Image 1 (tube, helix red, strand yellow):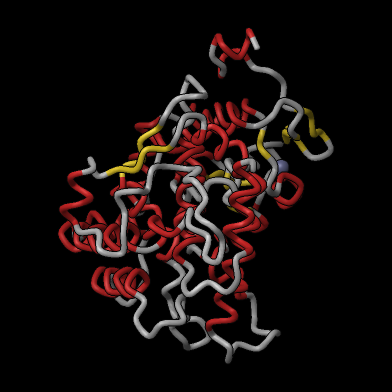
Image 2: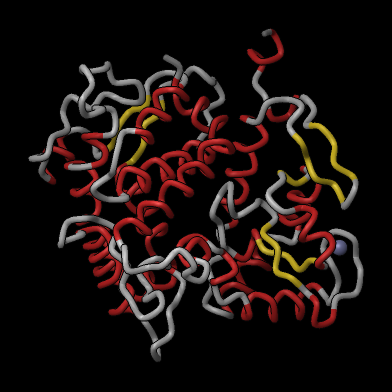
Length: 355
Ligand SMILES: [Zn+2]
């Protein structure tokens, strides 16, 4: 079986007890996009604190009340991961207002560290341990990473003894990065289905459950909008049209591919550019221009509105996205100007040129 088939099998195996497997897979895909190795066949270590932080980020907005309810993410009474994330959110909230996770982590580093430790232990005991063991099927060989040391009894000590990481088999990181554009949407759809099933009082017509779980528009983007207008002017980042009240805040690297809300990944766009760009990979020149606004400038603006900047994440994610997408993938340059991804030597290693 190919890696993709294995992962689809994971998705298809009956009713999940919790959304953790989906969360850990989405987190793993994002990690892989940001860590595509020069040598595509290399083993890659995934630091479990990093992975836990990504899982926390995924649940961060989901643990807000929806329609007056705290949504269940598990069919068990206790859901350790969302509960821990929700505790962190309520202890760091300011004036009743939710704040970005990065800011919460800075505001109360001890509470954040404790949350990471809690989540990491649950990941080791549950989804990471079970991910490659499909119930009801004969044992398949591990296909992502060696999980022989993981168990439902794994302790903080066990994790430490194994270097606080899982090691992706040769080639897996590159393959997952390449598959992420296909797999991530499928995982998010499965996630919405699971949450609907676990919260059966939600009617079919409930307003925008998907938007609540994953919508980037639900982040209060008002503060970034103001500071971007002030610093870079009231014009569309892509076509320079004057904006006025019609300004959209656009994620240069699409939110659906890498969930980066940091200021470095945000620009103002006109509705026409924003809508036509949608989830497409932007032309590399756009990403370069976004980065060329300058790390110091972006960091300073972000600090001013207590917002993450995430300059390095944007840079490494862009590198990973272009390096892992197949040549010929659509690339957005402007409305009605969508081209095919070309082989760009600056992103590839010499081995690629030979093959
Ligand atoms: Zn425009």
